[in-house]
Image (cartoon, rainbow, N blue to C red; front, side):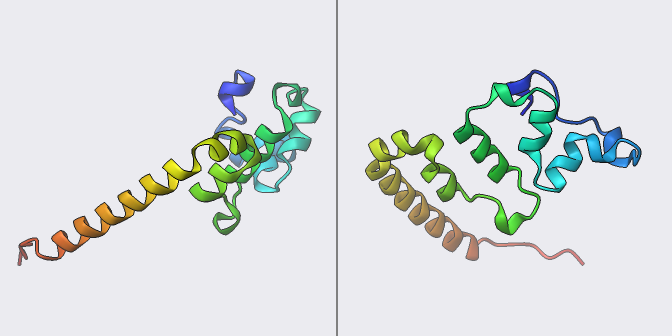
Length: 116
């Protein structure tokens, strides 16, 4: 967010300051109200809707609702890129998965030392 609006979304003291809590960017993130906060602070103008949508999904507080790498690459913000490169993306992803599997199998035979 900072690179889009030129300043941090919230300062660390806003997390603990209950007086300004509901007006802070931190509160907006915690309550899924980032677009409302940006609008109220005249910052929404720096975002295209697709960009803001992706950002909200990336910053979602609930980890189970946060976008995965697969969700990100398929998001409308990256739609053109993904459609042009999806064959290569899937090929590279498959290769990386195989490489990771081979590496994890090698690690099973790694001679660990137990300190007592």
